[in-house]
Length: 488
Ligand SMILES: Cc1cc2nc3c(=O)[nH]c(=O)nc-3n(C[C@H](O)[C@H](O)[C@H](O)COP(=O)(O)OP(=O)(O)OC[C@H]3O[C@@H](n4cnc5c(N)ncnc54)[C@H](O)[C@@H]3O)c2cc1C
Image (cartoon, rainbow, N blue to C red):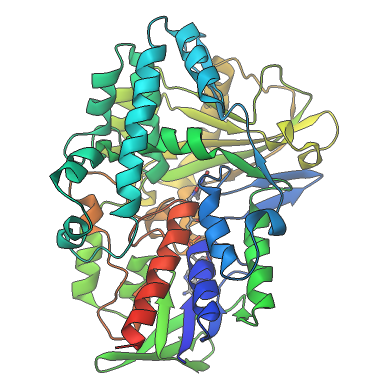
């Protein structure tokens, strides 16, 4: 059995470690931060708890499948809570709708917002179901070293049409909805992979269906509890976990990897190195490889995030667990993000107040607001100079949308793209690794197989991309590749 070192204890790395350990390998996970989980992280202060990364869990069955190999299940290790509504949406004209968890109720809400659009909404979800069925058994069921891999897993040309990769998500939405507010709603799902609705493929139309069919979930105590739970599963499987330990280099000898070198000089020998770190960090710093790095940099980087953790006094009428207040000008917002590369002046605001579902997340009578705005990659803005100004701008924007927090803020903390880049070694502070922008994006994303024997890549910057379920799936793909390679 192989000795495996997993570099990085994010969800992708932990997923690979669990599966490889279940396959009988000796696995060591090395994580630079003091805690496991990577971007799936939390912060608590003065009785307020904030998830600082993911606040929405989709496809819980992916985690059931993962935990099943360790003899447990998601519901045994955390308390998952299915949210209803999935999200409360509102526009600057004061209109809005609740995306309800039951599809008939969601359709009714859309019909109330936009008479005549309920049927289009239903048809859009149904279209998303077909996209998802095909994507799951083609795009997500194995590695993607070239487009041939995808085509090989397809049953015929109808599968290619079904996943609708050639037109943009925006174009698909426009063909379904005459109400531009619903086009904007549908386009928002591009941001689930840090992308633009004008550039990301219409394949992403499956995401609303995923939320509708298998739910939008919270984990009681905060989503970061899932990271802690995965850490306990690793410990129960006798995986050695070394936190607060930086990997300085992946050691290689000719064609094959030999292990890693830690900061301080200690070396760990291994036949297999699974890099859960961002692919740019791997090829720029840990195993310098200009050719591989150039290829990685051809993949479009995902957007980053600017977040406020606001400890709010008092309760806000009409606040749901997940809330979105849309930009008044979607084209300008995405133009700012992906073309002009500046923090949007009129951003879409996402507010997560988990206290709505979990009273223990804030002191009595208070709220924990996690406010997230999509912003361009870190180098586009001088965040050291701009963070305070943009914080005030976001607070003003909240007030303009009816969420005036003046006089109610007990404390406020800012997370900029620089923090994300620095804490997780995430290239340009990207939230999701690589984006889905462009028809080539899925094929430009770094492969799960590295350029040396025994080197594999797992997580958001490699196939199949970012987001909790996808990086967990990535762990499964990599574990299967390792097994297949070792048995040759
Ligand atoms: C603000 C924000 C909001 C998000 N919202 C959602 C959401 O609602 N739902 C969702 O599904 N996803 C969301 N995401 C995306 C999701 O968090 C990521 O896609 C996912 O957690 C990435 O997991 P990963 O394993 O690929 O990488 P990471 O979590 O980045 O893990 C990589 C790990 O490697 C470690 N590392 C790096 N370099 C080294 C080194 N040299 N030595 C040792 N360790 C190293 C890092 O510290 C890190 O722990 C969000 C992300 C952010 C930042």
